[in-house]
Image (cartoon, rainbow, N blue to C red; front, side, top):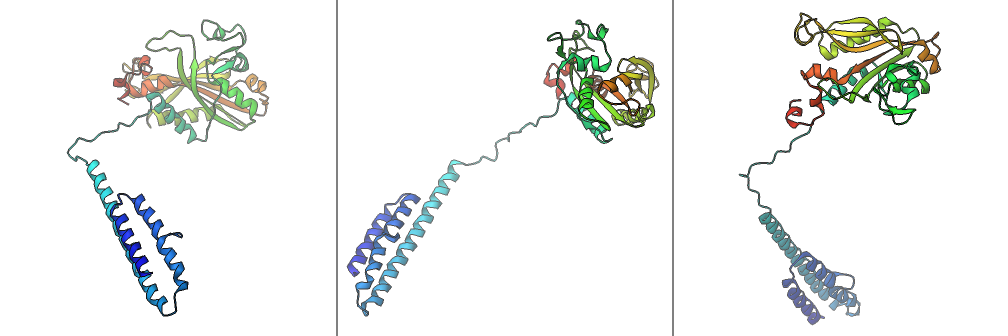
Length: 339
């Protein structure tokens, strides 16, 4: 058995010296120390030895096992060190090379304004509502008290897909969907794209953005509307901003008004921005027409409400001092990098 142990030790040494990777080390371990390994077979034969020989032979077997385990661990560490060294050499970093700067993107200026406007109204307890951009004429016109034959429904002003389907001309259609699906109290804003058949120039585009708001509840008054718009104007144009309401006509509100804010550039003194008037028109508003409430299944004798619509491009132009609307859509990085 001593001769057998010597052969095992010599065989192990020979195989270990020819190993070149960690897989070889594992194969050698299994071959000598595994369940069917050579040294394990010797251990199983210990039962055939006499009581006097067994302790001496057991000591020899343990010495061989310890040597095999120690040599395997040492060789494995050497191979791991060699792998690390090769990796370090292949991944040498030249710290003198200039670094690579990853440019971070930013929101489009229109989206920046939309987000700011949304945050103002969310802070006042409004929820954001969304609706289809391809709309039935009922929701876009008729439900908003705009009957057939009204100039706003003219094919020269609207992108019709069929006689009854069109690209929405205002986000007011979202308000109708909400009032049909939900009973008061309602407090929403509806930001989104709208479409009108306008030629592209410095102040007009066939595609632009609106943010409309709607509040319907018991006891809602014109005073609530004015207070809401004052909070909005001060948040968007500065704490010293004042507003004024001028009588106007919208089919879906009664009474209706155009809203001006004191010029953010001159503080109301008169300048080129406000064309010397001291005021700049920013939105339209009014109390929701009783007929609109009735069409949506809301009793106008029990509930009242107000609505308003804000042009986002106009607000962005005022905020950033942009004089040509087309710059927002031309994707000129030199322009967009300013915001």
